[in-house]
Amino acid sequence: MALPPDEYARAAVDAALHVQVEIERVELPPGKSGEAVVVGRVARVFRGAPELLSSRISFEVSCLREDDHDLPPGGTLWTRGEDLEQAKVLETYLDRDDQGRFHVPLWQSFIIDEVTDTPLFLVTEEEARRLEDEFGPPRTRARRLRYAMALVLHHGLVLLLGLGGLAAIGYFAWTLVEWQRAP
Image (cartoon, rainbow, N blue to C red):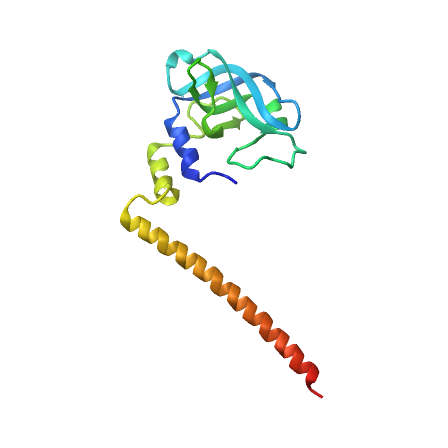
């Protein structure tokens, strides 16, 4: 099950780096799905330290094989291993851990055809806030009330439709019984 769109957007906005990387090599995980190691050179820096330009970096991308149908549950945005192996460029958001290793926050990496002068997958603060307003948890009392009313209405309609369906089946069964009784 995917995460709400606002969580992916927030991960992109909060990431320290937004770069395009020319891929030198990809090491796919053994087995069907897992973390592929991507090694490449930074070709564009859209956010972060400009001195990273031309630096050789590595990071992991969650990938799966074409025939993998037993995916673990969660919000992972999988990249096809076969596509990653053939890719020349990735646009990605990155953070660094305490040891200086790069990692992709909430799978925010995208295969692109070529290095570009402007980002192809730009997520702005305004877009993240819009998605948080639309999909995020209710924060104000009025919004919580609207959210609760929407849930009640939704579940009430589902219940009503379900009861209506049962009534229709009952009526159909009764009609069949009466039809068979008729001489």
